[in-house]
Length: 320
Image (cartoon, rainbow, N blue to C red; front, top):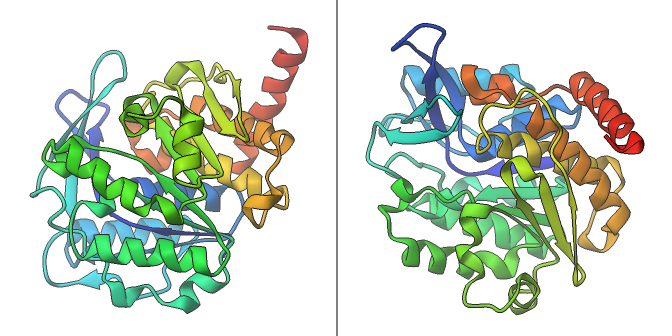
């Protein structure tokens, strides 16, 4: 596989087309990234566990339909799938309500993370919410450290959700910092800059934790790469996006896909030119993300992304 995602699995409930109606869609940041990579024509897989219930089966079915490989038996009868009610306001901003106890339904076990699942992948990707409860936390740590030992690119999305941590920001920060020695690429958003304190700069933070690259999404202001002592940014694509937060998964799937298609197989292969291309692809994918009908179904497909990138470059070259 090109990208193997590890982590939490939830079901998003988003407003439907009628007042007070909801449409159930599979979600969860690592699952969405795996699907975004698959939609870019690359191979992707997901390791996780999910409840043996209606919503869990919907999630498994959706992953398979989207071309994501599931290399282990992830259905468990021990409990039900976590469901997140995601409310969009008139400005497209999200608020969350979890239908189950936060973190209670993450059933990824350490035994599920085998070397054979990691050996052929170029990128091992995980998200921070998976650190909020055992046994998912242990399994996520094992996946990241094993990926590092195997010489893979280890990617980590600091997709902080206060409900998943019961508002314990200091606890979340400590857990996240503890895995960073295994991480090559860290993705954060503006709201997650808390991880950079008390460091004087993002580069001091990167040096302290031996991180090669920090990718920071800036909502409607695009995204920036912090790499080798330099920060460089690309603006967002002026697409139909209605939800700046939900576009993060679309952004990152396209970003990682561009790294892989550019021939990057280790952190040493990164360059400013490649990262600039990845920023463009990510920003375009984010700009195309309209979440009013669910996270997965809003992720752009390869032909849609290619067409929009061409338009982006035309506008960029004309100074528009």
